[in-house]
Amino acid sequence: MTERTARPTSAAEDTDTYKPESGDLVWDANARKVGQVMGHVGPYWQLRPVGGGCEWDASAPLRPATASERLSAGVALANARSRGETP
Image (tube, rainbow, N blue to C red):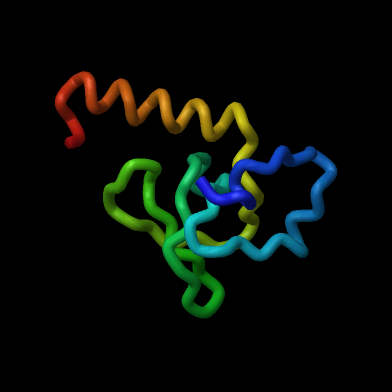
């Protein structure tokens, strides 16, 4: 995790001014899931599930993932690995 993804976020943070960087973990409100920022093209951000997988295009609103959202994504990845679904 980068310094930016590890910082605590507040509910009052202005999502209009938030510009994610590659590697940041963000909450995609449209898809209702956490994704890792892989890049940005035009109005879309390319996000990838935590731990790998198929990327998806996301448009705003994006915001930094909260600590509980990052933890939940990590637990989901660990559970998938224990079931043999991911390497």
